[in-house]
Image (cartoon, rainbow, N blue to C red; front, side, top):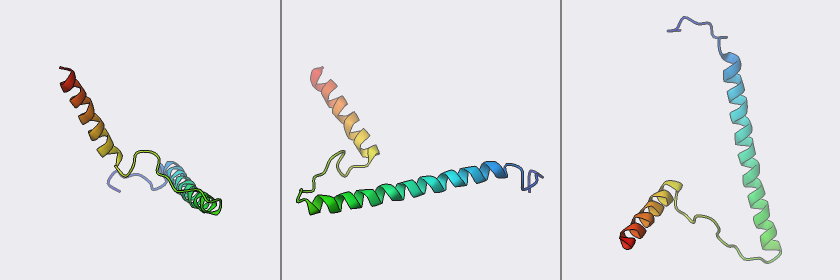
Length: 78
């Protein structure tokens, strides 16, 4: 209203963005469901649960820890 534009201006772009977001949310749900089904299969065939990846640290904490490790290596080399 403040821009004195019709509500139809840009509506197609907003609708497209909303549709894309909806598809991404649906895809995430399918990935979670797949993860859960694979966990069931793992249990059915008697495999143990293992943790892979970064552990429980958030990416920002990992980056900070990595940066600290680099600084420590440089300090030790100096």
